[in-house]
Image (cartoon, rainbow, N blue to C red):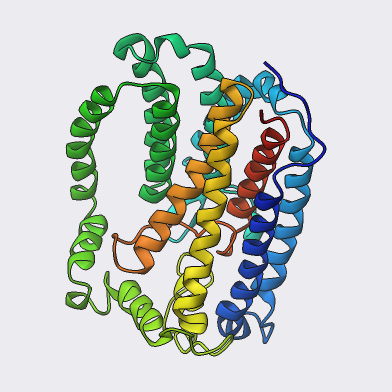
Length: 367
């Protein structure tokens, strides 16, 4: 049942998101200034200007969705699903999708490309919230309830793996599992599927030599100091000297072309180097606050669709934060996952802020 629109959305979600976004713009500039100066004819603001542009567009999208009745998303859930799959198919076709960082994961021209896997995450969250509300009575059954949504997300993950992009696949699968669990799936069914998924995951790693090397580098990065372990080693060299208070904003040493592309997946390393444990812990506490308010919104949402939608958006943010922080601290093997609101990247930033806008609209109608 549709709730009553309140005058104000969740203020803490807005403030936390904008604060993380502001930290992100500053850190993208600090982390990328040296690289940008070298690559773009002395323009040290190259990445920062683009991040600011995407941040502005994302905030506009956030406020639009904050005022867009989220129940209307049910009408576009199925068409959105179809569009997401068409994009995922198109991006893996040579000549249509463009290759960056070893993955054919982009559509578009130059730096203004879009990443369909980012759009697929939000699109599938909307669809599964709609589908699971409609079929909530069946979700405790394996064949009629659990199997259809899992088959659908497996198809999407399969297309993303063709790019190949194991990181985005992991985030998407993790997010959908969270939604399915919240919808009432039986734990024994999920654990049974997890036991079957582990051998498949091992096989996916084993058939790709570069993934296998990343696993070995995760176990002992110093055995591959100039190859698969290079990113982890340089990341730890950034985090370690940061100490309690950091070297000072803008005074990172690792950004001087030691840590590759420091403004993207490893921006937290530079943040910890410059702002220390205090700065890194503050950012993590902000994420924890955002996740808490997101889950609170899910619990108090006026209907199942809103609740599952809030769980999915909050879960997507939480899964990405856990994986990114795990990678940069050497606690997980290296995957190409950005840190929400902080890392450089237009598609990820815009879609995250759009998702937060939907979350804010739900918070306006909570009980």
